[in-house]
Image (cartoon, rainbow over all chains, first blue to last red; front, side, top):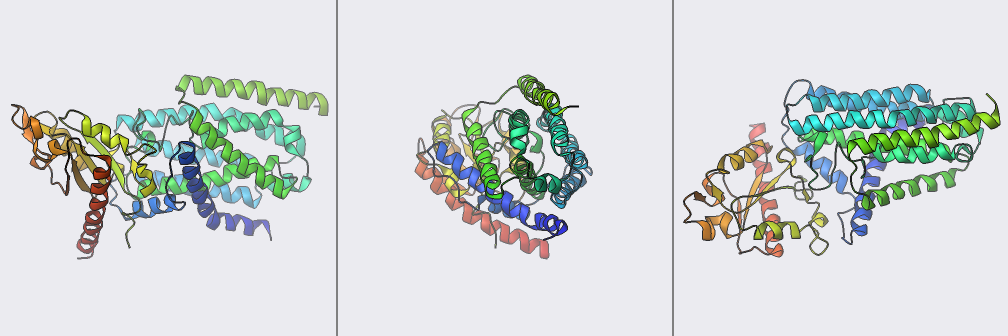
Length: 285
Length: 146
């Protein structure tokens, strides 16, 4: 199979995989709280319903911004699995996130604005760690391409354990899990109601949900890179990572934004930076 | 085919009441009743909600708030009045500032009896509301075509 066809497969399969993962997430979370939980296909039912519901659009910017959010998210994952430069892909990911924030700022709702502000804070919190991770990849493999990293057969996790733990830390922000679900939360009654998505309705929320499925699969693809020396082991590691995130989600209370920002930067500096210093000391500059 | 029956999202508002029904609504979320089994989510946001669940009566001050919440919900939508106060004002009906039940300000689709309404009755009422939601969706679609 060529790399291009894997990229195209991502476009069609990622929403299925992402939706199923979210269904598993909701069931596992429910079981952790001693509840039965919704059916496995619930995320798909939700999106199907949202598509049938009336959509109230508050102004002209809102919907185009959300469509751009989804399109750039799909482009991010497509180029990643197609084997393009990961550096470029991270820029695309950021662009996609910026469109989501713009859509939230389009409304006049104070909840929406507070959510958008917090999303920007989260972006500043996770971005340094992402960049340190890329520096780590390049130092070990000398490449920014998915397939060069996979084909090199090097166990990245052994070279970059600190960076991996740092990445897990910010992954919680990207997955919008507690303790970092300060901008959007699907859980009942947070202090911001629905934060960023407060003024979206019907098809608009469906777009956000679908973009999230694409994003989850892309992020798990990044996790896979650390374990790419072994296909089965890599997939197992990815699933374990996802379960770990669900566990964290159910055992932590929400952080304030100061704590989120400060802790993410400290983790990036100590674990990410420390890992790089050791790498440079042993492998030469 | 409509998916409203599989994924109804709730908005819960408590008007003038003793908060008894309010607590019973929250009891529906607990492991014992677990309404998420039916795909129901308590959204707390009118723009995401399909069902407006109101406990307690209407008074002079919250009448506008209830109207506003109802208007902010995208179609199709249903209203469930939970408990005797939401139905008629209950023991507060004679108070000087009470207007009465929820149907004094917005159209109500399902009335759930009880003081306080039991979680089983509330879930029953919501399930009943789902078929009305489905009907409303069908008429909405026909109107759009016409």
